[in-house]
Length: 195
Ligand SMILES: [Zn+2]
Image (cartoon, rainbow, N blue to C red; front, side, top):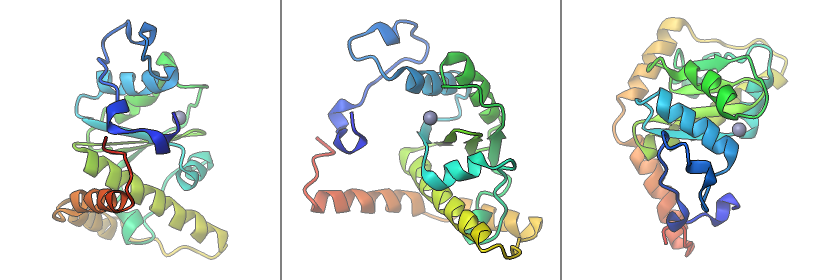
């Protein structure tokens, strides 16, 4: 299904430990199953997992060094919170997915840059994971565009980057309000996403 047509009633409830999942009538996409199944089996702290190939994050994943330096307030909020996988081995069927997701076993990492592939973002709630994914893509866009200038970057100190990241983590209500505003916009537009 195209993402824009998926409604609440289309969501699948799956058991990551059920070996029969792919043989059922509503079987999920095999690599989506590989990636999300492996993650939920291996990282119980990852209550919500979002995987995308958004363009700027994927450009970051394509660089020989996929480190996102703290060059502005937004990039700084991801300081020391991103894991990087640099052993891409093909489509994320079970073995590749398990190798990849093992990079998120450290609970201090909330984003995985999947080298030569895309990103996996985790969180405790849907709004938290969505908000993190949205701002990670924006952070990557800022970094990639800063590289385009060819000018030296104004990289923040480790101390200020960590301070900024901690301040955002304790900032109240941002993620919930972000997603509820977007849902309100969809409701205003008459979208049937919630049906
Ligand atoms: Zn993918």
